[in-house]
Length: 107
Image (cartoon, rainbow, N blue to C red):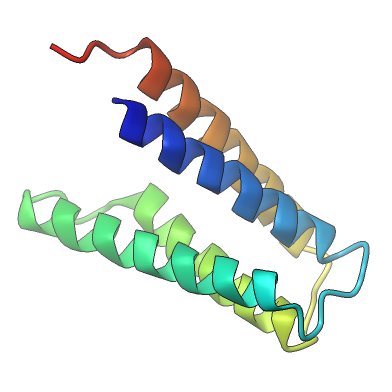
């Protein structure tokens, strides 16, 4: 379950980066590009494993994919005001994942 908590921390970082992209320029920032790629990989993994388990509506995995694409857009200088709200949504998902990972049993 610690793995889920770590993924929650990553969600908080990705969401904060996306929200911050609306307030400051992140064009050409290598970290934002890396965060975008990692979020896309995380989303692909989530969607594919959920589909393999028969769950085809993995909204949280799709959110990771969308955030990854939006981080790449922000890195390329394309930013819209709604990035802030999607970033906040991902931060809330990360907080939830972190606490589920910390409270869940490892048995």
